[in-house]
Length: 560
Ligand SMILES: Cc1cc2nc3c(=O)[nH]c(=O)nc-3n(C[C@H](O)[C@H](O)[C@H](O)COP(=O)(O)OP(=O)(O)OC[C@H]3O[C@@H](n4cnc5c(N)ncnc54)[C@H](O)[C@@H]3O)c2cc1C
Figure 1 (cartoon, rainbow, N blue to C red):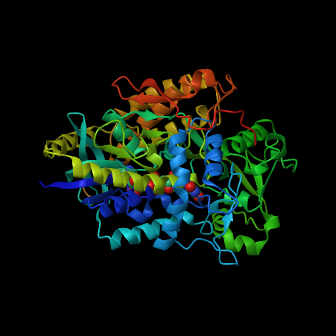
Figure 2 (cartoon, rainbow, N blue to C red):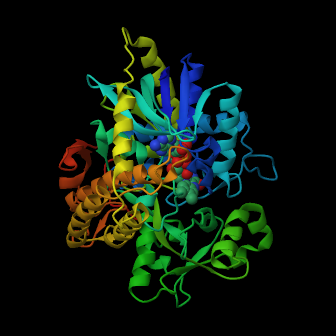
Figure 3 (tube, protein in one colour):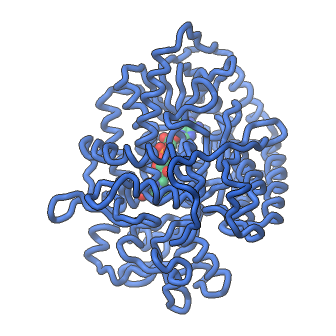
């Protein structure tokens, strides 16, 4: 069987993976990119509202950095935040030159909007389809550069020999054949894990694969308790209504018709950071001022023309998924799971502590988002740290001496493992049922507000979920497009991630950013100004601590 071999293997063809691939190839490396879906179906496609950069004359990278540090509730690593914000302007201009048609004002200058937690209007956008616009342009660049794409291949394992990552084992979904893809450097760019909760704004494919793959070979995973709840997800389905709706002037109302954000964030109102707005909404709902488990987002005053120009996609989403035309009626929204601030620990060049392994994008945690990500900083994170990791991996590939590729035996091991799964008898339980039970449990017990009792119960429930997972069978025993089997493997990845989230959340006995403990309602810098790291053990995640890097912004009280 073939052993494929490259200098740099990038797992994931979303914005982070594609940006990394282009950078590594421009540095002269032989690069391949692998994706379980067609690249333009990657979840970056769903990004709506925009991408941040301090390009305005009245703005500066330092102000952007301070807003990001404050947004992170001081858990973000400030060296990385400085890189993110310094490189934002050039990254955005570069995207424009590649062909992204950002919104322009009548004057012809790039037009921006204000996003939550930002002191200036520095979010650049393409209507409410910014991710799609950028993803398609990067895909064009990928084709232009003639990059090798393993399209609809699914990575099941990473290969590690003598504490060095040497590539991955992947299944070609069309045939079910399993191959070793050897690489001197491997980048995890597999995106987020939102579907470990139900409902979620994330697509079904966001199952934390890369975070779990890295964890299983010993890479540290940090900040996993920091799960972002977006304040405006649609009633029922949980589909996202972009923050752009509030930045264009949308109000949040409770059942009494009150703009309740005046009580919680009198200065920034609806544009306070996401954790603050989500908690405010949940408080209104919990105290009986909700509307059928939601609050209302009112956009009627914007008028049809502005909505048609800037928010057409969310208007369609409201009509299709909730039967509400936001031009005519307020739209019911509630906090919903959206983003993971944590992930595979990296430095500012995407390097993990494990030789040969890098990570970028939502799967990584260089910790620019800390305890709470500011809206429109994630697309920026993907392109800035995607590019940097591409450059770094190409450099590593050049410098590695006497490299021997791993043998085919890793593919054989994976085949045996998959066959053992297929050979399990059906026992009446189903992968989809376990996944749904886990998602509902996570939403119920590891939500916007958390307590020790709930979190410990979640840890116990995860043991039951894992025990069920270890016995469940898959119905489809075939090789060709066996999505049953893939769904089962994805559930295993999600279980690893959910366990890390639960145990880290128990350990953080304070409230910071998105992690709000009603039993410890204050931020506690003396004991918890640190990252919580998980490393793999057969008994479950082992916890340790890592320091937070402070460069110039000392922790202060956070008010909006
Ligand atoms: C609805 C929505 C709207 C958003 N809007 C914004 C916004 O306006 N601004 C902003 O900054 N951020 C936004 N975000 C967040 C942002 O879109 C994401 O964080 C970002 O796009 C993630 O990009 P990525 O490249 O890391 O991963 P993704 O785009 O998710 O790509 C992951 C890739 O990994 C591949 N992959 C995964 N597992 C495997 C495997 N096992 N084998 C092979 N391939 C695999 C997938 O096929 C895919 O190609 C939004 C998020 C959501 C959910």
